[in-house]
Amino acid sequence: MNTPPLMPIGFIGHGSPMTALEKDGAPALWTQWAKAMPKPRAVVMVSAHWIMKPVHIGPNQTTPLIYDFYGFPDELYDARYEAPGSAELSKEVFEALSAADLKPIESHQRGLDHGAWAPLIHLYPQADVPVIQVSIGTRVPAAEHIALGRALAPLREKGILIMGSGNITHNLRAANFGHREAPPVKWAKDFDDWVADKLVNFDLEALAHYTQAPGARFAVPTDDHYSPLLIVAAAASVHGTPQVKFPIEGFEYESLSMRCVEFN
Image (cartoon, rainbow, N blue to C red; front, side):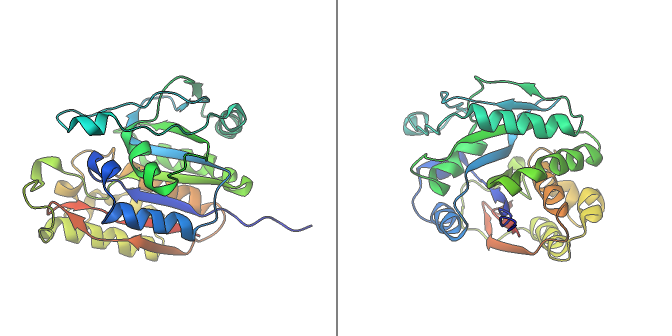
């Protein structure tokens, strides 16, 4: 009996919400990345922008998007991404999290936030792949993120893409929004390089205890954008030590890492 191949697991550095409207740069590379991977039956998105405990899941139906930002051009608020709803997918995610005793709560009408839909517009522009999100905690022990990732891991056996969405370095107070192409500042590059090394050598323990890494104090002032990486890395660890590659690398605004990660 042939075992179906495992879906890859991904982490996307989603950057500014404006990426939803862009055609070049990182968004174009996201499209190429998605084309290079097997097309998933569905996507489970772990976004930095849904902070809620215990873990919630949703939506299970096509639902209006959440525009969880302010001060952007009107056209960004006109963006649409009507991913098909899937009660079956919702049930599968609920069962996987329940089996790990995470006591998930269904939130069927909660729309996708920009951490999900801004990259999905480019990853699967036809909006023909069902999508569901799971919420994450913040300022919680790393063990909680690892447990969530491991609970999600069996879904990849069913052709489901588990995708984290955040940024490895995310300090908006330190960003130079007047110079998108500026070279990265030292602390941002140091931390991004450290994370890349721990990923390639797959040291999940080090990734979980990142606060002592070079530049961590400035690179991760809050853990919400880093935690999705830890969650998906934990998911990737369940089926053995993964192969890791970086389909997109680089920085924007001096300090925002756009690194994306693929685990196989």
